[in-house]
Length: 333
Image (cartoon, rainbow, N blue to C red; front, side, top):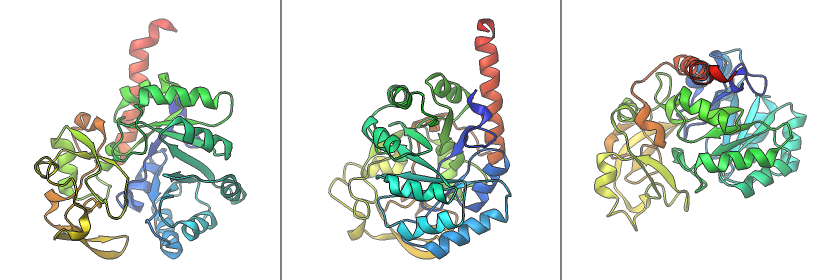
């Protein structure tokens, strides 16, 4: 069964790379120490020295393998070279193509490549470029969502496309508990990737008010309201906070550039001003009008009732999945 692990990890549970810096060394190490797959999030700029520092800091907190996620829509060549030099276990890529030559380069460095896709066409490209795993992101997912298909329809199609090839397919989008894990396995996935559930952990670098809203609020919306200038055409799923509900009708033709500054944040070691409608979520360092900032979340957020340590999230996912399968299917065996 899928919880027995993929890519040599103990469990087939992956923590999504939460941007811009929410899945930092503390969260990734906690996930790795629990036997699951933790992914750092590389900054959206060339930063080879900084990414090495981030990887090495994580290694002081765990002796287990982990990976790094890179968004291909931003400059990344030097960053990826540094990631391969550091020989992390996995390179996760998203929002663009990662050609066969680069996959081969990663393999030479002993690094496996996992490509996140949102439609069948991109899954075909990922398979032909020789990737080691595919994350299928359903439209239910939080943050930046590339596809329009729901997980329950897209996932089995990608599983069929992969066929007999030894490429694990990992389900992402709206999964927060053991029932979601079992559903993904039933659709043919060999693992699951969770963002929102790991965002709502003690070790995530999200601002406490953001975490509190993940517990208190239940509804999300797919929009392009935040970060339009910096990342045009990149729609995203956000929490329906009071600010979002009040602003969405007025924000149709606005972008963050001509908006007032509503706070300040240190992001990957750089101090930044946060404008209204910026695409940057509040982290632990953020000050100002936190409740008016973007808060990404997937559709499973209504099932999140508490902030937990990351190791507890992993433990519960495995225990709930095993228990559910025993209860529901033991008569079939």
